[in-house]
Length: 349
Image 1 (cartoon, rainbow, N blue to C red):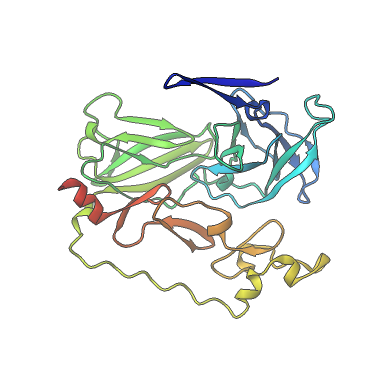
Image 2 (tube, rainbow, N blue to C red):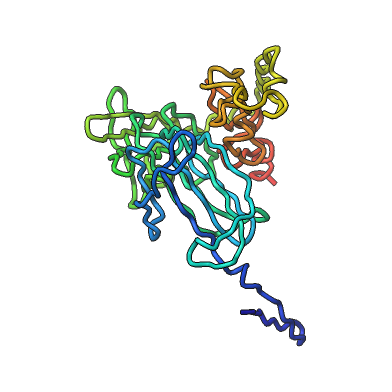
């Protein structure tokens, strides 16, 4: 069936064709798999309406996306998923959704061993541009409760009205509370109006700074689930914007790579063959700035596991990739780092 858009521009009728394939939506299937990526059973607890699953007692998971155009998996969230993705390939869809003699593409991603940092939104989108397409939010419960247990300093601009504390959890059943440190006591933040604080287990706390008394300071996200209690600290401050006169602190030099670093960077077929193609079993088998992936190869996690924001940089600390703003920049490094000088020019045109 051919569909068309009819546009009228300066009195001229323009017919813009819309092909049926552009209107079709990708279809997501999930499977519990073993360590060799072989299917154990379809993951039947998928709720298509909510697009949310909790992977309790599941060690490995495979996500597949089918469409009649090239597709890819995109991760968004506060975790750091270490995953291996198969490039979209041509595949027969005759046994899928009752489609006969029709070919298409399938993109699959293997997640495992599942840990809290795999928690997040996995979206199946076109490869040529990102579209609003089906997605599934995967919760991976664990002892840490929070995806980020280290906390961080959140620097705000004086004109910013709201900010986020990324207290996202690995299990939606975790009870999360927010406190402020007042002397030696933990007390709820003092609000001056309704709607000052909201919480979403997928995004964390959203705070309206204009509706809080003294919004700068130390915040504690406290998570409780059964017998587990985990606290994470976040500091909200505008101090960085008041230190523009100080010289920028030079970045520390990267750690010296080992002698065989270039060997690790080469593709698998260039370094080993067959059963012997195994560089690592754990992250510590790799150089400090690399991770061990499910195919037992060492790779740069800043390239394969995380996407940092505009003008931000990526570094690896304890084998975990971290986004950060370089000297002279502030902001949320997962979204965008803003130049301090540019901010001041905006304030004083």
